[in-house]
Length: 473
Image (cartoon, rainbow, N blue to C red; front, side, top):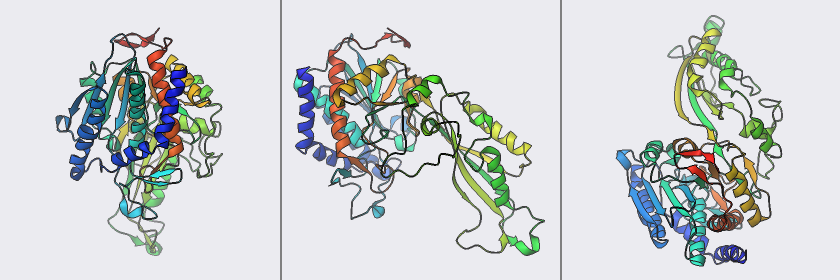
């Protein structure tokens, strides 16, 4: 116990010394913008330079698969196997960031220069995901410096395309199933439920986008001369959308909903409060399904959102019936939704309502996945985090957003636990992205305690066989 407490004190001293800020500054300074050929060299240098050097220093074997199979996604796999009989943990991080949006940051901030302003550390990737995977790497380094060994095995997988949908990550994981075989998956991304609440989430909602368009005419016609005898595409589009979701956010098409809200999910969400942060918007208690709590609507249910829509120019309206209208919608969905039926169900509903003229085009989609909250790893990790923080962590069945969790839960058949070191107000993907020093500090202490426990405790759940991670002993 004393060694564990000393490790947590070392984590505190590391942050106080300024070392964490200095190291994150170096990582933020590498412009690893995904999907940009101009930044391809920076991305590969981050993986095969910055990260390889850290893993080399910890005695890992490292394999870099840059531009794997010409897909544009690069991977780095680092492995430290101390004893085949030990518990093996698979970790994950992504090196890429979204565009810097340099001209939109406030107060003269540069997205690729880390800047501290009180508790906030501003910089692209500070929260998503460089600050988060730096915390986990630093925890491993501090543990090795103290003990000389980990007491468990670690495999760390990095990619460089998470911000553009993780191209070929499924295929890469399947092709390296043996090299990535583990007992449990533990990683850090996304936000905590709130800045002050240590959080574990067990998966991610899926998403499926589609476009509805009503291209009736090439131009507009005078509303006085033609109103009442020409179909209005904007009115038609509004009616078509209302066949899928009403004006109060309630999904009307049963095929766009899950079969049920499992009792295990309902149980863990019972005490979860959402929208309590100082910068959070006001919630609408009457929006979407009124029979569900806010937490159940956000983490346990589906939502159909209109992301964008247009018809003519709303800033310069003219007395004319527009010729066309378009809208982009997105279904955020949980496990239990038959997404394969989505396109045919939407088309059938629109046709049945007389909207044959509305065109449907399906867009990008990503899978929903999660493990059950009663998985034995959830309780074990929760107890470790509570010992380090003095707080019972919030358990979320999944985050509301997206992550490539299905790769690890389904493709690799692992129990998946995410321990985020960010918070909902971090402004990731936008100007002024930032991490909170207080959250990074607590995250480092939590991960030091968790890694210590993985190497010293004998009460961990273990998979009965590598071939079947569903059988627990």
